[in-house]
Amino acid sequence: MILQMAWRNIWRNKMRSLVIALSVAIGLFAGLAVLALHKGMLKSRVRTVIDAEVSHIQLHHPLFKKDYEPQFTLTGNEQWLNDIRSSALVKAVTARSVTQAMLATTAGSAGVQVNGIIPGTENEVSRLDKKMKEGTGLNPQKKNEIVVSRKLADKMKLKTGSKLVLTFTDTAANIVSAAFRVTGIYQTENTPLDERNVYVKINDLDELLGIGNAFHEIAVLLKNDDDLLTVQKELQQKYPGVLVESWKEISPETELMVNTMDYYMYIIIGIIMLALAFGIINTMLMAILERTREIGMMVALGMNRVKLFLLVFLETIFLTMIGTPFGLLTTWLATEYFYKRGIDTSSFAGKTMSSFGFSSMIYPEFPAEELVTVMLIVILTAVFSCIFPAIKSGRLQPVEALRK
Image (cartoon, rainbow, N blue to C red; front, side, top):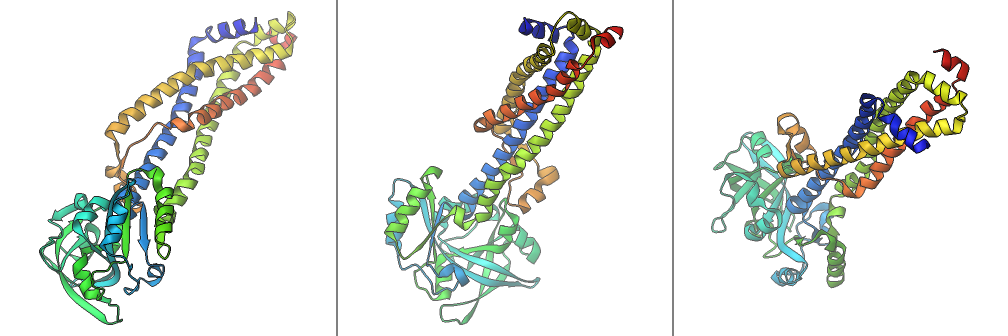
C-alpha cells in the first residue's frame, strides 16, 4: 500500500517530480562528466609521457644520471639494441647520447640538454618527425645539424638556417664548442620540456664527446602498457649492471598526479552532490508544505509516523530511480560525441595546458569503472536529502495541519 501511495504521489504534481528527477539526472551527469574529463586528461598526459617524452623504459649506466658525465656510457653496442628489439613485447628501440650544454646565439645563451639521436629509430619511439613545425629535421648525410623547439627558437631568435654554438665537456673534462645549423623547429604539448631539449645526430655528438660509437641511453617502447613490469624485470635480469627504469620512475610527477587526481575529482563531485542535496531538500520541503493538510488527515486517520516517514522516503527513491537512467544516457552520449571530436581548449587555455604538459585537446572517456561508485554517491545523496523532509512531515501535528 505504501509503495502504491508513494508511486501515485510523485505523479500528482508532475512538474515538481520532474524538477527532482532532473536534479538527480543533472547531478549524475555533472559527476560523471568531471570524471570523464579527468580520465581523458590523465590518459592523454600518460600517453604523451610514454609516446613522446620518455618511452616505457630507459636504460642507463648506474652513475650517468647523477651528473650526466659523458664517460658513463653503456658498455653494450648494436647487439644490445637487436636483442631488446627481438622481444615480442617490444614495439621499438632507440639509442641516444645525452649531455648538458650551453647554447649560445647572438641573442643570448641558455642551458639545454643535447640529445644525440638516430633519426630513423627515434621517430619510431618518440615521433619526433610528427612534431616538426618548420624545416626538414636531421639529414643523416650531413654534419652538425640541430633541431630546436619553438619555445627555444622564439627565446633565442632562431629560425631554420640559423647558426648556434653548443659548449659542453667531453670525457676528458675538456671544454668543447661546436657550431650547428638549425634544420628543424619542433613543438610538443610540454612547453617547459621543449625549452630544455635540442636534438642532433648521435654520430656528431659522439665524435665531440670522444665516446666513439657508444651511447648513454636506450629507450624502449612497448606494444602494450600492461607488459611494463614484465619487460622491466626481464631487462634487469638480462643486464644486472644497468639502471633499468620505467616511465613511472623517470617521471614520478606524472605518476603522483595520476594517483592523487582521483581524490581531487571526488572532492569536486562531493561539492556537486552537496548542491544536489540542497535542491532535493528544498523541493521535498515544498512538497510537504503543499500537502500539510493531506498529511494531517492521514495521521488523524491512523497512519503512524514510521509509515509517513517511509512514504516520503520512497517518493524520493522513485524519483531518483527515474532521474538516474537519464543522467547515465546523457553522459554516455556526450562523452561518446566528444571522445570522437575532442574538446579544443586552445582558444582559452592552450598555453596554460601546455605549460603543465597537457594537450589542448581533451578527449573525455566514459568512466565505466567508476560508474558504480558515482551512482552510489548520487543515490546516497538523494536518500540522505529526504531524511530531513521526512522527519519534518512526521512532526506535523494533526490538529494544526488540518487547520491549514
